Image (cartoon, rainbow, N blue to C red):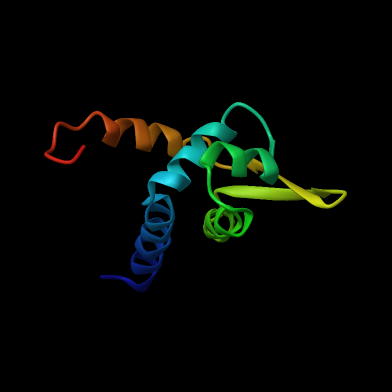
Length: 98
């Protein structure tokens, strides 16, 4: 396999891996509507702020979300809305665990 192709597949796999958690999918879907403060995401997810921040860091490192600071809080927005189409597509599978 060509090196460029390997790099492209590795980058795609990294994005899919970042999405591969129920909490992160919940966060991504909530961000499709609007930019949201990490404090609101904490309330939505029901975990402590540090756990939610770790999930957001995974999504940010994958390039799926971006953040901006407002006072003491970070506000996150979805940077790649098309990933929700992928999630919806695999959500329609009729496998044992889907």
